[in-house]
Image (cartoon, rainbow, N blue to C red; front, top):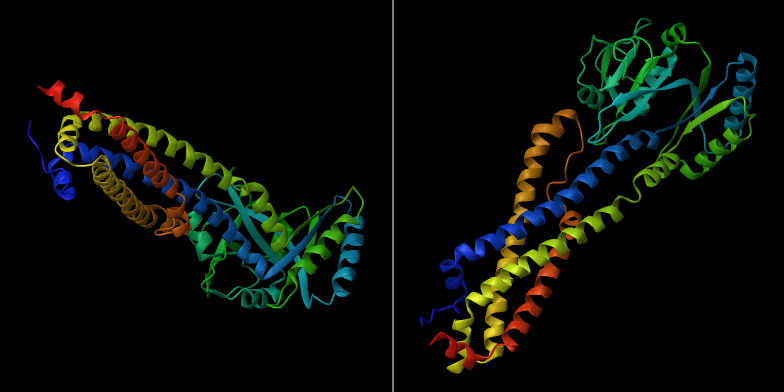
Amino acid sequence: MKLTNSFTTWLYIKCNLNKVLPVVFIIALSTLALISTKSLTSAIVSDYSRLGHLFEKIAFIQVTSDNIENKKNVLSYIEEGLNNNSNIDEFIPTHVEKISMSPLVGDAQTWVLFVDLNDVKSLILHLNLVADANYDDNFELLLTDSLLNNKGVDVGERIGSAHDSSEELQGDLLLSGQLTNNSDIDLFMGIGNLATREQQSDNTSAGYLILLQNDTDQLAVHNLLENLSNNVDSTTHIEYGSLLYFNNQIDDDYGDLDKMVWIIVFVISIVVTFSTSLLYIIYFSERLDEFGLLHAIGYTKKFIFLEVFKELSIEIILGWSLGVLLSVAINQFVNTTIFLPKSLAGFPVFDLQSIYYSLPIVIFLFLTSFFVVRKKLYKMDPIEIIERGR
């Protein structure tokens, strides 16, 4: 029987790559799967959350009614409520519509704010945007550079449901210019000419755009808009947008994502732990003669246990580290080639929270390795093993 230098740990790993590498790669791929799952959900939420940056600067309330007289009365009521609120310094007439965009997963819409030509400049400045062209009486629609990239359209094209049935923005509008984000915050939105839009629409909707200051009480504005929308008759539809309302929608739509991710994490961890444990048991059985002889010549079971556990621990750490490095490389590649050209948030490249979600598999493997090796070693009968090897 040949006694190998198994307890020189790195030498054992080097001499037994055919046994070590499968375990390392299983752990690495499992770690990659866990990190990618969390990265994906983080990217989905991040993409939708970025749409809410607009409501850090503005809020709106809009009335829709087929009865023109009723619409005017409700607008007067809303205007009075806005005038009497100390948290609101400025509001302007608007017509708000949604425009389609392509998020990481599924469908999404953001907003086009149609305002009077006289208010366009002040709105652009308020949103910290820069227009690349002069907007005159003939301009129809300006989109931010982020939204242009996301939609894959260029200035000079005509967009709307008349050209694309899947487009949320109704009608046929000329993309007259581009708005450049002048800060670190990307805004996905558009500004349109209210006069031009009114010529194309049925004029059943109108409202007010509230320009918020940095010290505006967002909760007070939200409560005001909610109260104004509740105090109208059922024949009138009121839609409003505020930062708090938007964040509540995000929580409603995606609040359970973390729970789902944790379920996936534990399922993958348990499956991988069981499959890896089977490999450990097979490899352990193949080394029984070696362990029996070592024990017979004076090595204690405790010593053998600690050395074997050290070998397995190194395999686990190597596999987990390789999985983290793979996730960084793959996320960076996918972001550069797919997401960034579309102005999407993309996967977090090195995100501690995503890595945190991969720790259960490491913990499970350490615990399983500990108990499997301990149980097998302490049940081992060296005399029986030696006699069996004769």
